[in-house]
Image (tube, rainbow, N blue to C red; front, side):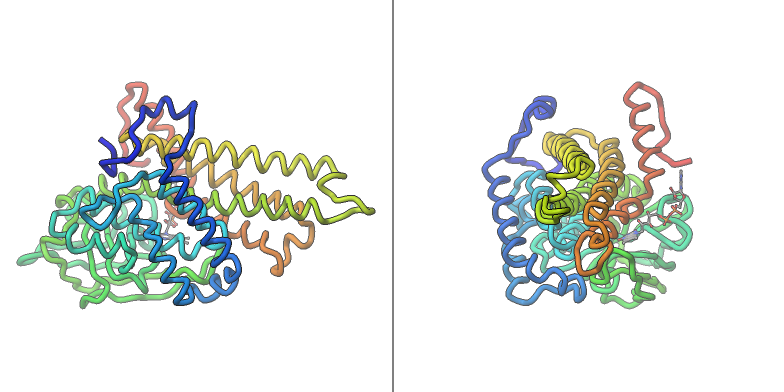
Length: 402
Ligand SMILES: Cc1cc2nc3c(=O)[nH]c(=O)nc-3n(C[C@H](O)[C@H](O)[C@H](O)COP(=O)(O)OP(=O)(O)OC[C@H]3O[C@@H](n4cnc5c(N)ncnc54)[C@H](O)[C@@H]3O)c2cc1C
């Protein structure tokens, strides 16, 4: 059964390895988002990366595109389209800036576990706002001591009359200062449980804000829970099911996350090609004159083509309802390594201009390197990929990390 049933495309994923083709709706999404990005985002992307907010007119246009709607069921305000369609949108959107695409991504990271594990009450109350992007979501797992290991979580939920009292803190949480709701993972005895929390309620306190290398514009920071009361009906799934929910959400989340960097890689290639055609050495463009510049361009495009092929193969698996636990991790490994190299090659092609803040390539590299850490370190992705391979050959593997 597909993850977003009913899907508009239902094919055997093995066929799709040979034949990546897109539906009419998916091609329309690509056209519309590309036009929006070229016309409305590219001209203001520097300002956007400073301020983090879309001007009102452009924000309205962005919301009216209903990008997250494309993938969710009609019952919650979606249109029941494919996961591939969402990935196409995220990839196109991040070509100019991560700011709007990160909003869609974060809302997906809350809407997805709500759709699959949430009660009817949670789905009816929270999904429509998240899917329309009228409300902002977040996901909080990381703490001071760990971003990888649920066994080390220190945020605790204790049973009380009619609900749970949550105490602890979360670190580096995207949108923790601006979100309306968040999924958090806490210890409940020996287990992990997922809760839906509301940022406006007593006991939710925003802490220190973080600035990372890639952008100042995306909100990120600490959040404290001080005797935060979560009613019983705000448990997502069952008590003790948190680790499973986290793994499943992160597996699909890594695909969405990876797609943001494919847009970044495409931009690095477009800028490099333009530079190689226009920068001259003794009267000839460097792209025509120097074979080593050509070698870099060739390496960049082959890497991006390989990423795209794997990305859409994994999307096809999602749309066919296949398990993507291994693929989510393997794709992130591929993307994090190769987009870093693509943006690094782009800087080299640009010479000193590649290091200048006046040009865009240095910033693309700064964006690319965060893919190595966010959504889990690459070492963890290696462990998950290898364990997934062993499990496919009948070995019994603990999902718990070493
Ligand atoms: C821009 C940004 C946005 C973020 N947004 C969010 C968010 O919204 N929500 C959220 O919950 N978190 C968020 N994070 C946190 C991020 O997901 C974590 O930082 C990441 O998972 C790594 O965790 P860590 O920093 O604790 O590293 P650790 O887990 O402490 O890892 C440190 C090192 O040890 C290695 N290591 C750890 N465990 C193992 C193991 N079992 N096997 C092999 N090697 C291992 C790692 O590979 C790494 O090299 C964000 C981070 C950034 C930078």
